[in-house]
Image (cartoon, rainbow, N blue to C red; front, side):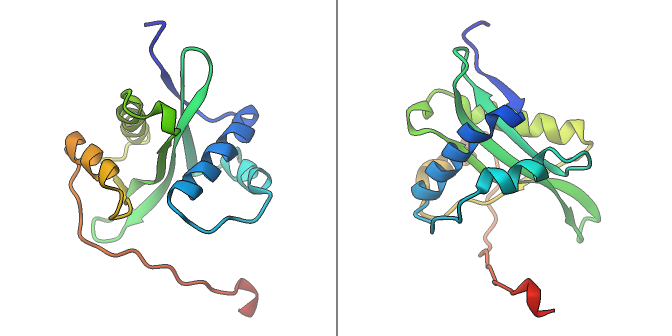
Length: 157
């Protein structure tokens, strides 16, 4: 088993590599760049004593961090229960096709079980055919919905 990658929770010393992977993911999805200081904003949220955010990393036997899954607890009102929302799953380009995605998904499912939650939900861009094929192979069910975003000014309250 010494050549088996492991899924583990992020540690403070992982933040620089995590931020690199997040920026790779942003570029991969052709999204707008984010403001600087991501590690400074993300770290306190991930490591707060009462955090409801989980970042799982996949680490190679050589110690390299090659991917992450970002999760939070969300509430489904129709079901009146919490579930894990996987906001992101990303693997560095040279780590794809090696089973790391399935290993990360196993880690996310284990996290849900650990928290006593019975479901994981996520979305992927409709153009990301590789991800769609991957999730279909896992036996996940695709839902036909469109995701929206509305910017608000918090100071305008």
